[in-house]
Length: 187
Image (tube, rainbow, N blue to C red; front, side):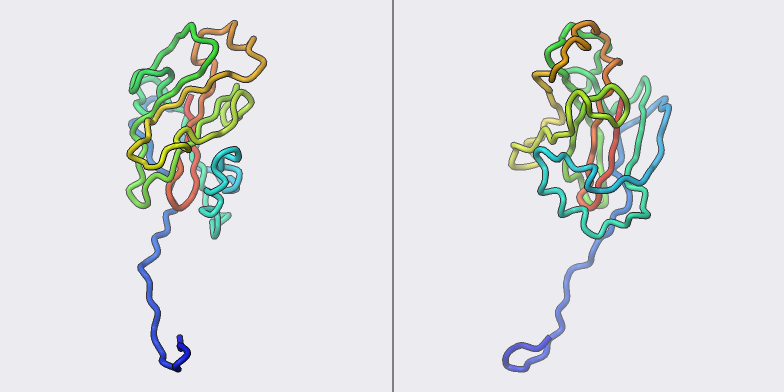
């Protein structure tokens, strides 16, 4: 590069880290499914409150499998139904809100950019509540609670008023590393 005085200089920068792996979950036991698939990066971004994450989709290789799907089983210690940290609930009388908490997600290469939570009636479906980042309103990662309470539940409420078994809800948690997006639905 030459400046206005015709002096020549070499410009250098720090190394670039490319992370092609999804974040790792906490302990998973008795999983019924664990696989990688290709999903367009922009489809994994919570539309409603995280448009700023779109910048992380630039230069994403479309041939790389970036979407990890895990259906965990009994004994897993990653995603828990209910409001109590690291404690899963199988039954509840609550039919006006949905709560979930999680622990153990990590990415040693680039760190965790954020989380997104959705609720549907089947895996990777968001009919009941769309993807959103529960920590959007916080200023720093040190303030993250790793929990979310979704209330009110959108209409029709009849589905939940008749059911008190939490397992009928498919709560998906998406953990996103800082360089590419990956999806971790849990049941």
